[in-house]
Length: 491
Image 1: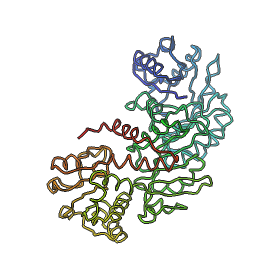
Image 2: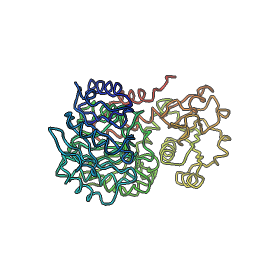
Image 3: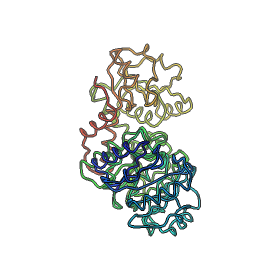
Image 4: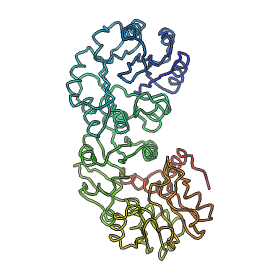
């Protein structure tokens, strides 16, 4: 079950959103009384309520908007209980001041917007002694270990417990709460009105993650990156899981570079069976693999991990096949050999694409902003190298952008000046969000043939899906999902 938080300044607005959510299928809402900018009329809010509610009134120290006295706040919470609210949320330090009454269930909560404290178990024990029907712990995550500690509290709790880590790193705790035994998780009414850092919207939790169908038996897959918020992989893979009626969910994991090894060691406890790997982890993750395919070995970068039943990590690289496949679909199988290709970038994607182009007989030149990495890559793959400042001097029939330049939100940037694009050059941009990058737009203005990152993204996702599930991916559905989300304009 998802509890949707509503925080509006007027009773009328709060009641309208409550009705709208109930019509959309919401089973529980949280009324944030601290957001109302006048005297709170509880009877008006609770009368004929379309679904059960949690009454909450947060102090500023707990991330709330309450500006009145503490005495008045506690009076309001007691009145909510008397008026028959379904749940009341009480901070642990005041729970003893508000006695149980009637059928109202007590949520005893702890909020820490600074950190996930070391004494989490002690805090939990303290809260469990406060006559709690539900224990709620919400802390700020600074590492993947913070997530794991909060999820472990939920899994080991004798009483119903909700554990939430705030911030981008903490998003998986919200999505996987049900898998770890939480009676419900929290979401916000809309993306534009998050009431806590990292909070997802009700629509995201239902339409993308299908939260109510996640159980302790659900297999977990995901993407690891830093940052990860721009990734469309959760949308594509979850839609495919749902289409094939598979008991699996796909979660975005923001994993800081320094947390990579620790996170991979936590995956078994998280129930993770497979991962997509992207910036900045494609190369570093190779060091943690137990086995790898020929592409990972030849390229030195991995974008897919599958965990076997013994917890061993098997690495694959689907970037190579998907990039070459996208190119062949545009110019034909026999038209790659002999082409002169300029690859911009020196990261994992550049490695995979350069490797693929070389295997097809193309002459590859690498130009990256990181001179040392570019030189290492050129030596490894026996390619030519060109200084970044000299990239516009290259004579190439294929230009491939493997840098993040032009990626959302920096959509007005391009890695290659339009004045140096020749109409005979094929321009391939691996950035997929947005699809119509500035580089692609300018290339089309110069009458160049173009290949967008969407084509490569869908192909590599389909290959990953096959590795994850041993089932053929619903390609058309995946393509539709990407197009729908980014609102890509047709050529």
